[in-house]
Amino acid sequence: MDSPRWLPLESNPEVMTKFVSCLGMKPSWQFGDVYGLDPELLNLVPRPVCAVLLLFPVTEKYEAFKQEEEERLKGQGHGVSPDVYFIKQTIGNACGTIGLIHAVANNQAHLQFEADSPLKKFLEQTAKMTPQERATFLEKDESIRVTHESSAQEGQTEAPSLDEKVNLHFVAFVNIGGQLYELDGGKPFPIVHGKTTEDTLLEDAVEVCKVFMARDPQEVRFTIIALSKDSF
Image (cartoon, rainbow, N blue to C red; front, side):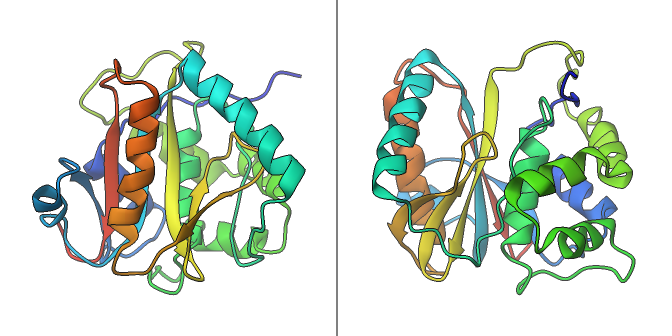
């Protein structure tokens, strides 16, 4: 049986904020663009930041690195905290929604939800599941799918067809227990990138983003988005 496919979500902070708002997250935290990697431009991002999303092109170099990374970490263990909420991506083109779920699920102590929030309900129902079970559960979650579809149609660029293969991918960076985690539903497990703090999460995540960019120096299709307390 073919795995389900959704329309891809645009890397547009307004669309993302509306998406989680429609699913019952209160707007005290909002998504906004990170306009550059220099300290002066990072200083423009409202603080605190509780999650960073990176949109990047999936190239041959990236695929080769991903394979090598997986083999290396499988061999040495990857020391992931049980507090990390991780969901696999089994739905085509859903990496944007998976990234948002990773950003929100791992910051529930900071974020607030409406009483009947479909997103909060999803997180509560999947809290004790494995990453694969969460993925299967998401495939059947109509409220998230419908909100995703309407959000995918709202961006500034025309949404591609369901069958079109999109070679851009979202990952999320979060701070769990003082460790910087890269959460990518296309990978078998979370990736630990060393120590971080609530105050330095943005700068620490950007250092990892720079590695993604350096791997494909000819590419310009990179977008960084921060989830911040104050409105942008």
